[in-house]
Length: 212
Image (cartoon, rainbow, N blue to C red):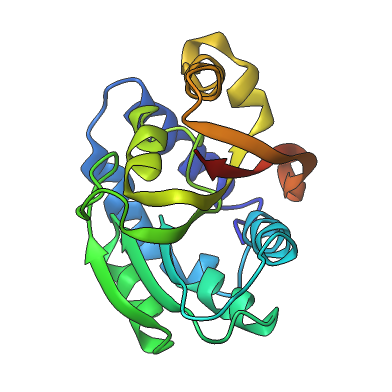
């Protein structure tokens, strides 16, 4: 978890990237500070809980973890009963991926910068992204369309947004999300507001959606 001490530096770098700055600065920061994120975040726990509650079956699923970080989503999902799934993860931080690899829970881990998701269409039963979307500097709005693309028909997507950034028109996230729902590409099954970064009083908006 980000501490009060680390938050100002992280926020400054992330906002700089969001405004067109060098993404390598944020990647390097993650590479140096990856241990702060080991153990899971409120966003990871909430997404995993919502996803596990909305699964009809957990057997033989292929699950993509977008912005997998240190791999806590796979660990949390397994602890919630998702035992027979194959986990795949992508992240822009190589140090984060090495941490995830050490858990030995992922079938494949790929270093990739969003919105690029290097998998074919309709490939995964589940796509989860906890703490990455609608988080300044981490993922452009096109990422959600890519997540939908690699999800199988009637597959599930579970993800979090920072509520304040979602409501900020400059981010483009609210407009993009609404358009994808209106076009019938996804259907909202669950929409909840809950904690995201408690130390900074940041609230999260959480979704479970189904691809049509």
